[in-house]
Amino acid sequence: MNLLRLTFVLPFLLATPFVSAQKTDSEPAQVEVARQACFAAMDDVRAEVITELDQKMQAARRAGDLKSIERITAEKNRFIKQGTIPASINETALNHKISLALLALKNEFNEAIKESVKQGNRETAKRLREELKSFEAAPWQRSTWGFADYKVLSGAEDWQPFANKARAYTNRGYVWTEIPPACPLKQFTPVAGGNNTPLQIQVTSPGWVFIAFSQGNQDQVQAYLAQHAWQPTPYTFTYNADGGTSMRIFRKQLTAGEYEIPRINFSGPFLVKP
Image (cartoon, rainbow, N blue to C red):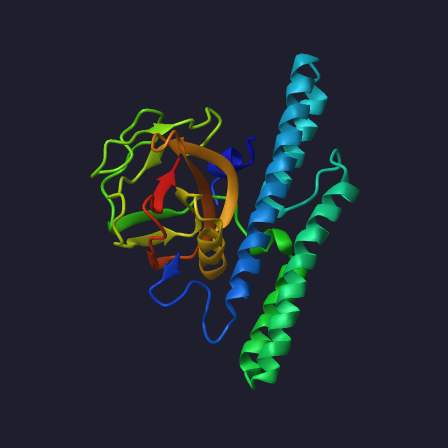
């Protein structure tokens, strides 16, 4: 799977901030979950388009077809810069994927709007309504596909190579295992296993931030994801405890600002990046 790899080579926008990410008032937690899920879905759709265009480019190159190479290059540039759907892509299939992402978002937003009105939070309801309209009018412009620039303020050590056999924790001898070769994330911030100290980061350029932690207690994991709106990625790996403890990488779009990322279990989370 190479969807996330594409997010790192295309330069472009939104853990829990010290005051909650994207929450400006009494917004329900599920709204941020839906928002992040839509960001992730749109990012994946865009990555699929780029992959398909690159495959067409390779075929044209093998055939020595200069005209097709120039046409596909122009289509790719317009798609990246303006969100124009390439003529060589199946637009019906693409629009179906976009519609599914927007439908899930619309259902959650409409429910939140209704609840806000019931609670007398008309300003929240109006803000959510306007945000939903902006998603529906220009879904490509609502999300980004680049990774965030940020620095770690506290809670973790300096960046280290994220590789098999690398020491996983500062206070244990465990090492990482089964990191897939296709994983685009190549660095991590070691943390102390079992420590409850949260991660503090400062985002200077908006985009995707990635974390990883173990999957042991699914109820605990699902509660954490629902509260903090991290989205799962396809990437899993292990560390060599108890025959191999399963880990997964998660993502979230963060805007510029300072954020606190709470610990969930012995394993983390810890930060990973390209």
